[in-house]
Length: 425
Image: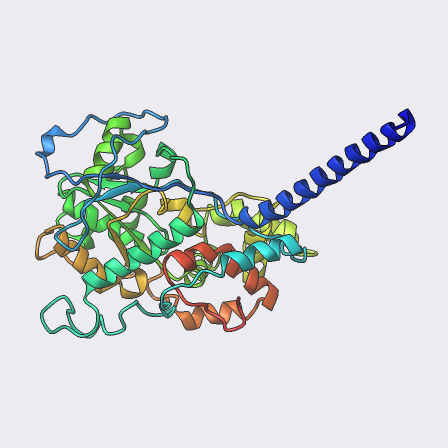
């Protein structure tokens, strides 16, 4: 073999290796696109259930930030025996970023969204009802009650939520609970209850109930709106130190109440933008009108009043929104971290009376304490129903409705709500 022939053979071999490496890199990148579809979360760190301790053994409270590492790995007991206190840590993930209303969906975004929607879900809950249709007829937990018992309904809701989290928020590494994850959780020490606040899902009345449970009031009817939201009677979990947070997460009964996402969004819009408001009009309204209304009047720009629902949705879906997110329309996943904190009780606004009173019986609340039915604000105005929400959403284009559904998709999935419009996918 001549030196020239040997050199050519080496060059050919080197070129082949480069081409093979490039092909492998392209294949890896294409597979990585499909697996990035949702932020990853963690398998659970589960705590054993401990018997209730005297209330005076609670760790002291202090404001201490920092990561909270889970103690040991144990298996919790389910709600089927008595009031549940199991706790598991699953890694949190950040919800998928909302899409800009002005841009068309890119092929990569469509591919990710279609992949996440291939999960076979349980029978979806109608938007205006609970998972067991006959719950409101009579007390199903009594012998002979119709349909699924509320206890069975709880088991099914938690199963669906955990499966969605395990499938789309799973990760091989463990995450620690931080004070940020528990900043929306309120503490009631006497009955060992942790309540995660989801605005526009009955949170005002739930805070009233917690205040009565804590002995701060004799009746929910005596507590004014400002006392509920602007007082300091109820402690948040993030105000305790590391030991106090972990102690309560592992031994208290953790609960949250959710609501159909489109109805919750419309309820928030009606409350904050269709009535005088000294905070939301100047802070959110002025920014929304300046960005999304062509030729807005000076008066509108000065006051921030008169925001229309399509303009509000444009703000919600804009990845470069001119003013930040707000708890009244944020995802439940970000407010309560249900894939990180294993909630013992998942209630629904649509079956509030049954769910709430069942929960109160589980924690052995006083028999004369029931969940209040009165409307906290704008009491003369009808509550936001599925029909009212539909009227607002018909003001949007089909693409805007789809993008709003995508924005709340994990909430629809975790809490088993059905699609509010037939053309959504």
